[in-house]
Figure 1 (cartoon, each protein chain N blue to C red):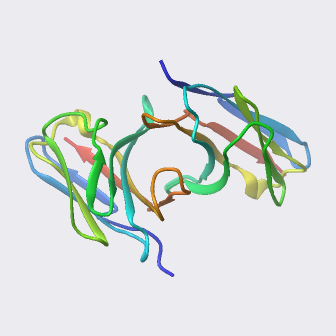
Figure 2 (cartoon, rainbow over the protein chains, first blue to last red):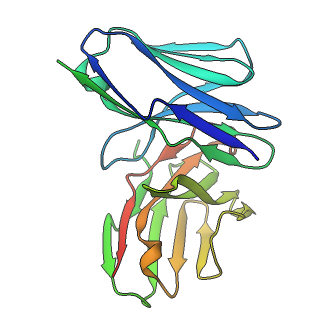
Length: 108
Length: 114
């Protein structure tokens, strides 16, 4: 069965403390892996799309990487405004499936 | 440019009533997605349209749910009759050319069925 698993469920960091979020997947026929950010009371906001193993994308303090089994979202020197829930989604030949998300809190 | 617009933002109604959620796509986008988000099940894709045609409705939970695109810029999701277990946040999203492209989400409708 296709699955998308994100870890950890919640992560608390001090401002400036770099870390990584994980998204592991077991799907056949990956067409794309997406990262979104969701703030409370808002819809998810698109961050990155990765299409093939070895691909990397960067935006400000965020960097997303992809292997054949998982993706990482690296956060370098986070700031309090990076606090949000980060969702990954996998698009394969059958459907599009979201992970449960990682709730990130960055303390000043 | 305006983003995806959903209405209403909040809806509280009694079990058995008909509920209609509305969504306006971003101009120029031709793919439309309806999602449901709950604490227990996370974000689930309900139905996906491309060029006003439903492509995949395998996520629609029951016949009580129906979705339409009467034109290229507007969609409705209807629940009739509504049940308490339908309580959730419903999002619509649009993209340019299909499911494999970045989706732009509205801010959702928080639906409570009493």
